[in-house]
Amino acid sequence: MEALCGHQIKRKKKAAVITTTVISLLAVGIFVYVFHYLKHDPALVNLEERLRPSSLEHPLGTDHLGRDVLTRLLLGAKLTVGYGVLALLAIVGVGVPFGMIAGFKGGLVDRVFMRIADAFLSFPDTIVAIVLSGLLGPGIGNLLLAIVAVKWVNYARLVRGTVIAERQKDYVTIAKINGLNSLRILRKHLLPHLIGHVLVLASLDLGKIILLISSLSYIGLGAQPPAPEWGAMLNDARPYFQNNQWLMIYPGLAIAGVVLLSNLLGDYLRDRFDVKKEVGS
Image (tube, rainbow, N blue to C red):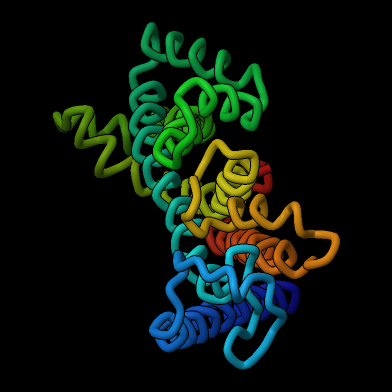
């Protein structure tokens, strides 16, 4: 009993820390962005102000083209995290239906799906994403397509396994006897059992997707200049690292912070929904 109470207290503390951190970052970010953006255009080139150190006018200094780093960093949060969330929604939208159909129907449909999944899982996600992005051409749209193509299989396999385990239970058999069609059984009876698993995997995956977007933008396959995406900012700052390390440190810290928050959220949701540790591993 004491162990259970201790676990609940620990879980509530973790939720409070995550919620407070996210709200604080959003509040500070919105406040600074609104008042700072009015003074600095993130795309405006001003070579007279290039590589300025931190000051009241430019709290995080300026980059090699004289653009305000703080403004670009805040705008980059909207782009980098926004792209990550968009890719995640597309991945879930593709993977969950495929997994539900394959797990519920079984037979030839399931065998075909498993062969497709095995083909995708034969290679590391990053390598496949790089190859697909290279074939499709540089650009954030093509990068998001590549990420969806390599990530949807993980969700489909997770959902398929859960559906196979649940479809053998009595409540599904009773639903079939009562004349419910497959679509209603999937939507009404099986989907609620999937939500916790998908949320946990998605929250843990968000950080990985952001890392993937940033890393591929860093090598020129993602967001293109002058978009202030964090990975692209790292690439722009690379030639100046020896004398102006802060140009790379700030976007690097931003990426690390978002990934850390994503992992904390995933751990909390895993405890909240009592999902096994295998999810997201």
